[in-house]
Amino acid sequence: MNQRSRGSNVELFRCWKQIGIFGDFSCPKLAEIVHCRNCNEYNRAGRSLFDREISDEFLKEWTENLTGIKESEALDSISVIVFRIKNEWLAYKALYLQETTNIRSVHRVPLRTNNAFKGVVNINGELLLCVSMADFLEFAPEEDKEKTDLMIYKRMVVINKMGERYVFPVDEILGIYRIALCDLKEPPITLSKSPTTLIEGVFNLNEKKVGLLGEDKLIHALKRSLGS
Amino acid sequence: MLFLVFEIGDERYCLEVSRIIEITPMVIFKKIPHAPAYVSGLFNYRGTIVPVIDLSILIAGKPSRPLFSTRIILVDYVSEDKVHHILGLLAERATETISCREEDFQPPGIEVDEAQYLGDVVFDESGMIQRVRIEKLPPENIRDYQQEYEFVALKENNDFLP
Image (cartoon, rainbow over all chains, first blue to last red; front, side, top):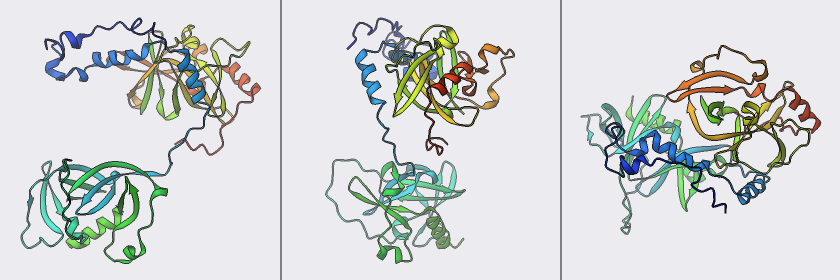
C-alpha cells in the first residue's frame, strides 16, 4: 500500500477534539447543532479522507473490476415492510406505508366497534381508524414460543393509500426489504380460494414465508367491514 | 433535482444525477496518441470501450490528481443523431450531491464560445456552482474521434435509463 500519502495532504484542524463534542464543548455552534456530526466542518473533514493518493494496486484492481459485467439487481422489485401478526409474517408495500409508531391507546367508538374495527387512535394529533388485523384475517392465537433474548416490540403501522388511512397493531416489525417480483410466488390455491384472503403473493425471507397483502384488496376489505 | 458536485481547481461544478450511469474510482487508461490533452484515454467499462475526458484539463488546463476523491463519472451522452453513448468524465472531489430546483439556476450572463458546455449557475452557502451541459460536451473534434474509434453504442432499449 501507498503509505507515504497518508495524512500528508490532509491538513485537518480537528476542532471537534478541541472545542467540540470530544473537547471542551466551547464551540458556539453546539448550542444549535447539538453534536459535531451535524456540523459541516466535521463532514468536510471526513470527506477530506478521500483526498489521499491512490495506490497502483487500487488502480489495477479497479481497472480489472470494471471490465466485468455488473450483476444487476432485478429491475422489477418492490420495497415492502415486513411485520408479524400472531404467527404469521406479512408484508405490505412500503409505498403505501405512512409511518410506524409505538403502541397508542385505542379509543372505542360506542356501537360501532366490532370484531375488526377497534376504535380510533391518535396519530400525530389526527384520529385514525384502528383495525385488528389478527381478527380481521382470522388468525389463530399466538403459539407460546420459547422466550428469546431479542427484544421484540409491538408497534402500530399506519398505512395510507390515496388518503385512505388505517392503523393496525402488529406484534413485531422486521423492517423494510426490497424483493424482486420474480421471487414473489402465487399464494397456495387452497388459500387463494378462501374469500377472506387478501394475500397477493408469498415470498421467502430469511427462511420465513411472508405473505404480501394486496393493498387494494386490503383497503377495500377494510372499508367494507367498517360499512363506510 | 439532484446534482452531483465536483471540483475543478477551486471552483465547483455540477451535473444532473439523472444522466449519470455510475461513478467509479480512477482506473488505468489506455492512452491515445495524438488525442487532445483532455482525453485521458480509453478503458473497458463492463465490456464497452469508453473514452474518458479529464474535465480538469478541459476546464482548468491541469490534470486531475490521482486521489480517492477523483472519480470517473459515467454519463449517458446523446449525440446529435440521437444515439446513446457512454462517456467518462474525470473530476476531482466528486463526493457531494446537492438538491435544487431547475428554477434555482441563473444564467451566467456571459457565453464563451470555447466553453459552451458550461451552463447556468446556482449558489449555496459556500459559493457558486456551475452546471456542466453534457450535450455540449465533448467538443467537436472528440466527436469525430469517437466515430473513428467506432464508439460502441448502447443497445436501443437502455435499461438503466429512466
